[in-house]
Length: 207
Image (cartoon, rainbow, N blue to C red; front, side, top):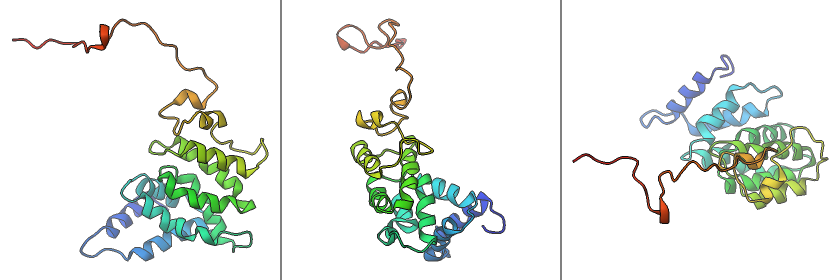
């Protein structure tokens, strides 16, 4: 991965990890995935692989997040050595698809460290906008409020009004996340539902 910085390399690593007969040692692989976000300069391949191969797959997302950040969240503190805070700043930005209950403890731990609050601020929107994401609106709003960041902080989070209205993901309510009004309903006829709520068949089987 260091030599080629190509996504194909991470795909081959994933296939080798899953090989039931001669798989790679899992701890060595996860140690590599923890090390990439800790580097002073991180490439694009590691985060892309984490998002696509680890976090967007419901079968692996919880375990992948625990390995890459969750299990180390209790070590986050103001005087933590530099590599861990670098990882805690980068992982949330690609982990929006991870189930919210899995992410929340790490977010709360990071929010307690002043230098990591902007990372939480930037990471929360990924949970709103990821196709497979879906945070808890009330908990996310509480977390945003607790950060206490200036209103002009770069990369603003999802609008507070959308969270306050109970929206968890903008793909399921796109107009709640913008200043545009919701599209007006049009009267295009009865459509598939007729009077009394009965289903109107758009076709009739020939006999």
